[in-house]
Each structure stands twice: as C-alpha cells, then as structure tokens.
Image (cartoon, rainbow, N blue to C red):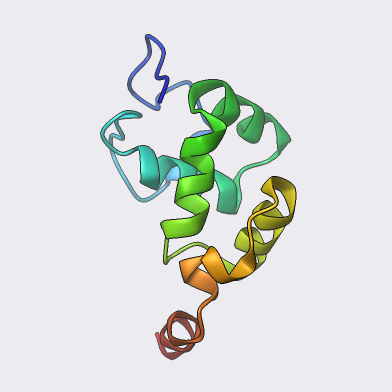
Length: 101
C-alpha cells in the first residue's frame, strides 16, 4: 500500500464522504476509507483513491468488505474482473442481514 505524505483524510477527499467520523488515518483506516470512497465517491474521489492505494489493496477490500453496497461490489467486480463468488458482501447470508437492519 502506498500512502503519501498526507496521512489524514483532511483535504484529500470531500468531507461529505466522511460525515460521520472526526479523523480518519489513511493508513490505519485504509479498508474503511476505500469502502467509503467506492460506495459514495465520484470520479475525482476514485482517481485520488487509486493514486493513494494500489489496485491490489482496492481489490482486496472489494472481496472482503461485508458492508460494501452490492451494486458497488458488482461494478468493481466487473471493472477488476473479480468473480462474484469471491465477494463476501454478495453472499446471500450477508444480503439478508443487510435487509433486516
């Protein structure tokens, strides 16, 4: 993973992406940052995300993050050519739990 000089999210991504948290460390909270930007970011945010993190790290988050929106996971699965069966948030038990909440 590559995290450049600015370790805090301040001034890196739009503040509206992280409306519910005070401080986010780009290195310590990498999975959270990646998932949030993939779910709610625009093209500029995605470009910044890909400049900060290696594609292999983004792919790992798409595969492992249970809280990722299914539509987001499917989009990035197609983009990175990830088989859908490898994505945890698309497994039926997680989709049912998400609907129940």
